[in-house]
Image 1: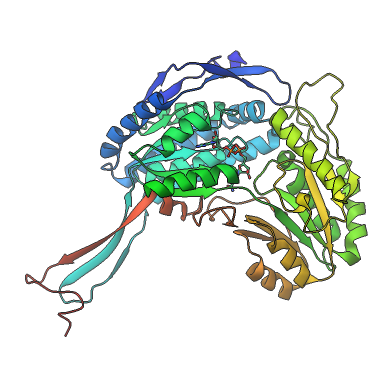
Image 2: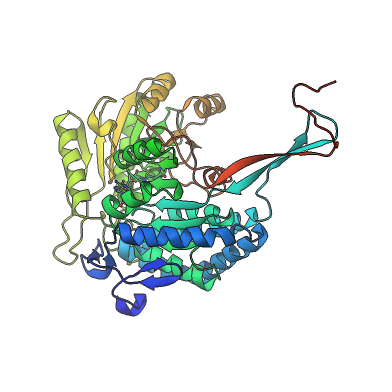
Length: 497
Ligand code: NAD
């Protein structure tokens, strides 16, 4: 590992310097259990240093014209492009997702770099008529200051780019705490930013646990906004802490995403979409399909097709190009999946396929779970309501379109949904009535593109969005500016003729 990573111990990146911190903890490849690197478990002291560096650097950075700030992002995008294969291999090693998906995730970061670099010449505000004579009015986006970014392990580079790129192009400085399970992408991205010419202190990376580093960031007076992606429980705690401090907070949390299959759907296409969105990344995507709401007339035909497609899924080490399903991130993740399979059985759902840990015959020492399909589940079962975060999908039969929409909307999350149908009227009713932040028609529940807003309703978020131009709303404040060139006192709402 040292040969490809060139270090066996990562350091924090503070004020443009690599700083050692102790203690450290080993990071393991989830496919093999091999130790790949050590990462610091930092604390409040390192957070304070990083925030002080960010605060200092941000003053200068905010004065750099936005098109020049964007030049750094164009360069980041170029370097990421050159290093796409290296980054993808490292991503597979630390996270386990198969190489093809790792390449897709790195590509998402590259796309985000060029898209957000374009914002350097936009960052649009408004000019608007003033209500009084000889008066000018406009609104403008301003940086917030120091922003705190807290990211999960399941998309260790894409989510970081969704947050740090808009923050940086808008003139903020960043303190970023990546997930301890996947620190290598943060290390690589910090190196790329340095090579791209980002001034010292504009990006700082502090490694450590949520309870120490994350908590210190959330409670730091000089961090003006927290942008968090992770679980619902953690998000609620962070929102409560930020609320007490009147700190701006953007939350992207879990999902319980469904594919709806109507009786007129192309069932081969639907099966393909379900398999990809339920079992890709071993179901460890916030947008993973974990429910299939299927019209009762086509349930059996769909089941047959799913079982055939399941045969094509090879399980193993994602670095092997022939593998389609990689490991679960760690033992705790695997145990949670096993627990839910047991709950599904006890609640009366029928296990159609999978349902057990995948035994590796001793060749691989990682954590694997067989792609699992339950059928004849109903909307009240826990496997149909709670986030499992693994390769488990439950078929819920319904009698018509109206019931399908109702079942989709019954869960406490609202990230992504999809419908397979060839009826144009249903397509438009579904996109109107599905209560999720993302809706797909004749495609699975995954596959977001970076120039559209990403996020969800209800328990998935708190009204903000990652990526898209909407991400800028998290990292900027609006300022309204009035210029009176009449040479006399003009009172709004009063001196109107
Ligand atoms: P998690 O909530 O355990 O951790 C996420 C991050 O928060 C990590 O960096 C962690 O160290 C940090 N953290 C933990 N406790 C903290 C605290 N008290 N204060 C501050 N920071 C703290 O989530 P996870 O297990 O890493 O990720 C999986 C979850 O993320 C799933 O629920 C998944 O649906 C969700 N997710 C959502 C999206 C989305 O955009 N909606 C995308 C990816 C993942």
